[in-house]
Image 1 (spheres, one colour):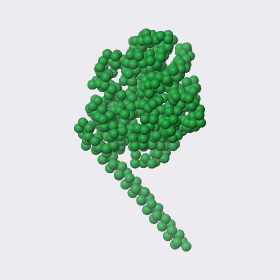
Image 2 (image 1 turned 135 degrees about the horizontal axis):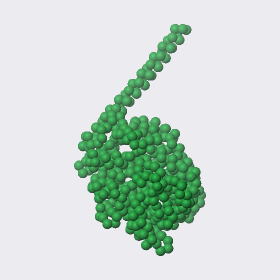
Image 3 (image 1 turned 90 degrees about the horizontal axis):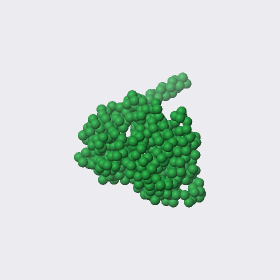
Image 4 (image 1 turned 135 degrees about the vertical axis):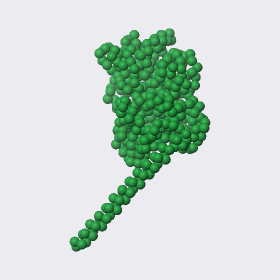
Length: 510
């Protein structure tokens, strides 16, 4: 009996040893494969004749990004990209982990890649972990193969000029609420408030009404579910706050693990209440509520889209429109405060144009307002890392080879500040859009993207920005508060270029 037990123990020991050895060999083989794969990927840049910063054997160039963030205390990737452009030229390569990015800034290259060869660069880059979110059926993430074109065709009518004009009165009423809140806050000269948060609540309130026909109280209620969760979702798309985002870029070979863990992330935690809220609105509208409303949700319902398609596209519009619009508007307000001459010229144009009420037509006839709008988005493009397209197959364009699987990017912040594109690019000057031909090229001004996948809500965002700025300047004289830094520092959070700190302005009733 004792001998039998010893034999069993010996057998179990041998089995454990075999299992542990097998696991060790598997891990070692897997690690060697990863290292070999990286070595081969990191050779591609030099093979195709491109330059770029030195790559770490495991991190690629991501380690440089992390080191800069640690040194600066924030993500200054737009400034870094400018430095790289000056050092390596108009086309260079970067490795975000094993993702190989080719950065282009030449106007002809941009035209060839994003427009003329759109069929080979039709899909946006979507990190594998994001395949687990509720945006895969939306215009933000769906691919040409999964129905991007049909989705865009279905959504496009809501952004036709006539529909946007019909929404102007609604937008204007929401801005009036915004101005009342600012008036209340401005009465207390000692109160220092971040006007960026007020712009965020305004843009979310506008989206709620124009996209879903719901009257939100988010401008006055900071606990509003859509407002709280939208802020959480956007702030979570940041490598500084999510280890799993870095892990998914560094070890795409383990994507199945990262996908399984997505449900436990802050992104998922913020996403679920938003999707549940939109699902509830969908059911109410399907039952007949708001049947006479003209909005995005009704348009999608009338098109016969599935519940998944409707809720995901509404979610995309909520997230994309909320953050980009509010960021553009806070930059506009800040620039008006910093440059009194610009503010004075705009105010004079408003007084000259106004007869009784500033209508949709009159606002779009204001030339200086239009120049100010374009120069604001040139100087501070709110979205900076979204012009990224995956190369579907090997292709050579203007003597440059683009390998299958690479990601081609055009960075608006860099392109908007190239001296080859703009005179005095570091100066803020709306007059360049009034008196100069330098702004005539659409591929030098790309805050809304390039080619067929440009931002579908561009006209709506323009109307929202212009109406808000006009009503704000008509009501208040804006200035930089005493003791506040006059130089705003932009930082990159995900794909958004937003103010690094709070934006505290002085508001004087006119």
